[in-house]
Image (cartoon, rainbow, N blue to C red; front, side, top):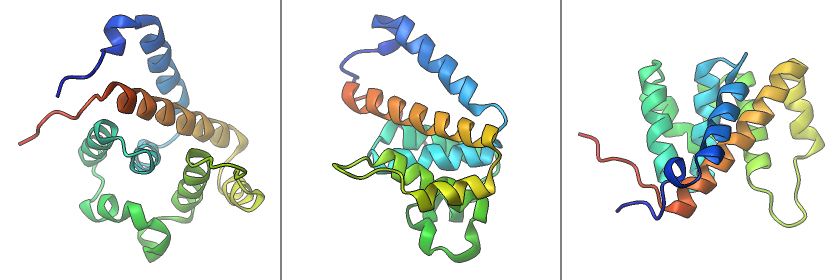
Length: 149
């Protein structure tokens, strides 16, 4: 299926601003953690395009199949993920699923603040908001992943 519209073609300024935000939010964050954040948010948002892209990118960086497959159940996966990764994933989930009356809890924020410097935390928050925006663009425009293999 073709996308409804191509944002890079019809709204290049928006697309370029999103690309700049993606690059800016990735600074000072290890690429493996960045991909886990992007995959988890994309799972929650049911964004097939971003799931395909970021699982592919994670594999290219050496991420294991086990960690990719278990990401949907990271909290139950024992020591498969580091405490740092778990803190980032918890923050990703709460900042992504903003249901009526629910916000990022003090406990989740404190858990992340204990694992990351303020700079890193700012970058992670930026990354979470950026992947959520990309997910919403892809889902709204029905941008489907390419067929692989």
